[in-house]
Amino acid sequence: MKILSQIRWQDILDILIVSVIIYRVLLIIRGTRAAQMLIGLGVLFLALLSSKYLGLYTIDWIIQSLWAQIVLALIILFQPEIRKTLAQMGETRFLPFFASVEELRSLEEIVKASVALANRKIGALIVIEKETSLDDFTEMGTQLDAKVSRELLLSIFHPSSPIHDGAVIIRGNRVVAAGCFLPLTLTADISRSMGTRHRAGLGLTEETDAVVIIVSEETGRISTAVDNRLEKNVDMGALRDFLTEQFVKPKEKRK
Image (cartoon, rainbow, N blue to C red; front, side, top):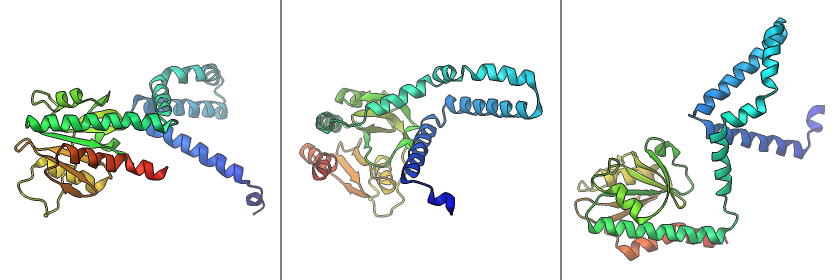
C-alpha cells in the first residue's frame, strides 16, 4: 500500500505512453524481417546475461563489444520500419482544411472512375476505409500505396489486369492495395441476381464500418454498401452525395 501511495498520475501517464509506443512498434514490425531481427537481438541480450552469470568472460567481452554499436546497428537494420513510422507520423492531419480538400479531390476521382467503369460495363469493387482498420484484408492483396486517380482505378479493373477480380482498398487519398479478397455475406435477404462482388461488398460492411462501391459487370449499374445496407442503381449525383455524407459531413459536425 505504501508503494501505491507513492505513485503519481504522471507515472501512470508515462507507463501508458510507453505502452502505446511499444504496441505501435510491434504492429509496424509484425510479419516483417524486423520481427525476426528483434528476436535475434533478444537472444543476444539473453546470451549477455548468461555469460555474466556463468563466468564466460570471452563471450561476455565479444557481446559487450557488439553491444557498444547496438544503436548504429538498430538504425541500419530497422531502416525500412523507421522510414515507415516517420511517414505515418507525417500523415497526421495537423492541417484539417488542406487534408479535407485533398480527400474531396480523391472522392471525386472515385466517382468519375466508378461512372466510367459502369459505362464500359467493367466490374469493380472499391472499398474506402473509415475508422476500422482493413489491414487484415490489404495483407492478402497486392500492395500499391498509390495516389487515388481515375486512371489508376480504370487500369486496375481492366479485364486484362491480373488483379481486376479482387477489391481495391483506399485509405485517405491513397490506394493501399488491390486484388484483395473480402468475406461473403451469408444473409438470405440479398437477391439471387446479385453476384459475388455484391455479396463480398455487403459481407465486409457486416464486419467493418467501411464504405463499398460495387459496379456490376453484367448490367453496368452502380451499388453502394455501408452498415450492412445495400443501395442499388446509384447514379453519378447520388454517388457523390453518398460519399459526401459518409466522409465530409461527419467532419463538419465534429467542428
